Image (cartoon, rainbow, N blue to C red; front, side, top):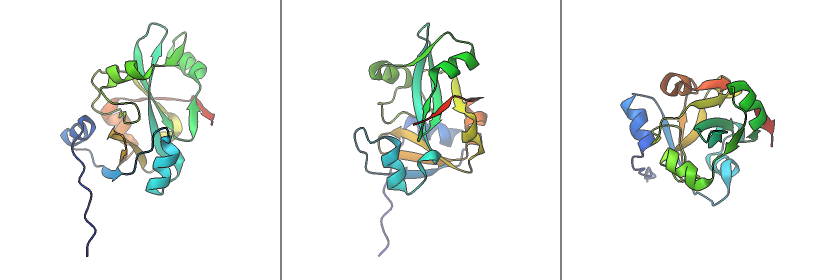
Length: 164
């Protein structure tokens, strides 16, 4: 008997990807509260370095921005601020991040956000063959070519990763 493929309903992220004729694979998994990328990497059987976090942050003027980072790394907000010409960068509070992105924290995708924000991507992510990034819902990643981050989102490469 064939295993039934789990149906995944559309999200603003998948609508955006389809509208832009982007190739992606769908990867639903059992979401665990506060499990982060370690859980999704384990559930998908992939290296956590290839699972990309979508982080909504803000500068000193409270202007939002998105940072895409390896699942097994942290963002050096000091290095990021220096590279993008800001005084400071800090993570948004969950309710503020949700207001900017339109997604629940834990299900934030850089695709199809409510508000258009500048997007920064850790440079080494662009060298990976495939990345797994949130598809707009908790427990749902999409597999894409990292080149799509620049072609569809005009993501700017930065170097601000810190070991976890």
